[in-house]
Image (cartoon, rainbow, N blue to C red; front, side, top):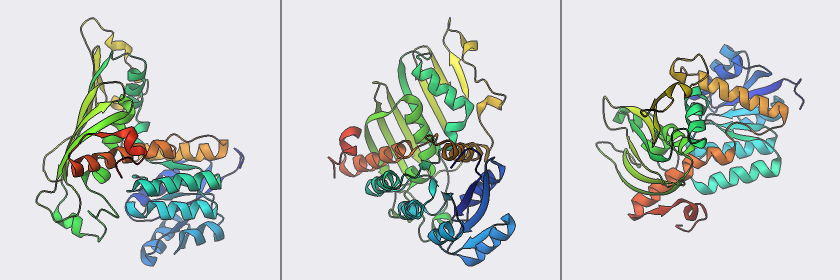
Length: 342
């Protein structure tokens, strides 16, 4: 494919986030939304009519008959690996919604399929596109905040029992995950991405006031690869909560789009560089940037913003957290990635 070719695009899974991906594709340049695939014929045909594209009941059929170059996988989390692998083997590049999958072995198989087919496999962590967050990562890497001391992610949301009962897969271990893999993963990814990677974790999880297979409360102690420490607090059992990220260094701190420098430090030098208010984007804008980057990566033959190894980092961390909670012990991330706790 050359930079002059239009990428023929398909959406796999039209409900929920699939609509956001379709909007992003329609906003992007160098790409055309030509097809969708969904098991639900009513949902699929309605989506196709609204988007002026062709519905297929099967993703592989869509790729082969619709001559589709690339797809967004927007199906339930536990189906991501199978769907993505089938799509890559059918010839399409894949942009996979978070999480890459819910098991390490499945993510291994996805990466292996990408290597074998030569197809691009990218993940969706749209908050990485926010100008403020990108500037915060740069400030940590460049030492502008001094020595990193603390990193904290807090996600306190509310999901009712009706939410978990609304679909058979919600709240299940095999298909969904709990408050970490589902609701908190974006904040967790940002924390480990900005702060520079996690070396080890110790966690306590619980399920409170809900009938579900997974946790809806988690508290985690982290040690980052650079020696700093941190915490994650996550729940979907409370009302009136918060969603925040904070990075603290010896010279200054970053908190959800704002920098605060210590006395005598040059606060005005920590600029975001874009016109977006606080550098935090409106809903949908981050997806638009992720999709545009994915399309450009395909046309230019380069790596996307969030390649598979990056997309799986937050999932590996969450799986290590779950292992720590199950075993009641400190988990070394490098050892975990090599299967030493299996």
